[in-house]
Length: 266
View 1: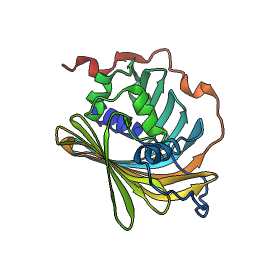
View 2: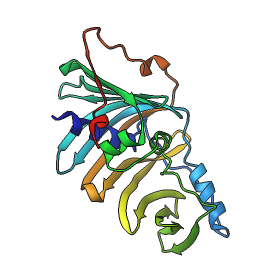
View 3: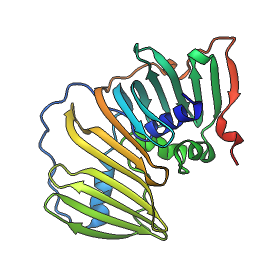
């Protein structure tokens, strides 16, 4: 598998991961009467914040012009700056490690005895996932927050149907649409267009109750312009804390060190 293809899978995966522990019956939710669109959206977005520590297992599936790939993965996330992700091979052994900490990213491929290390710049991330995303936004999305939205400076239009409250958020040449499930007051879909060109689409499906957290057990992510489609089916989820040593993986002394591939892209 090409390193670029693997990296594309990894960074797109970051724009989404988490889930697991035994799911319980959905708890009663807060009832909203929408009288102020900005206030309601702010409450919904703030309610997405999860615990500072999150870990678990997931099944990843990606389809694109360059790769069709299915794999299991384990992950450890610490809000707001650190991620440890392992892509597993057929024998459930780590095939590739992805470590992100304090605006730096590291890729370690044990079978090739190679490590790639560089800053988590917009350019690097854009090379991997097709859109320029700040590292802080990447982390936020992984933590169940949708990409950053400026509500104060935007025009907000609300529509309603039997199932969803639908908000169109317009800011200059950027339009975001958010579908909120009326039964659970959770985001079920997010789309973004720039100059009327579709950028990304995210679906949050099959919500389940995990302790005090109501979270989707399936996330579907796509970049229409790149024909990327990624689904993440979460198997286990744990909110317990873990050691920061997970973000300082030891690399063998004879490992080849390379600059991140995106630095060569114009």
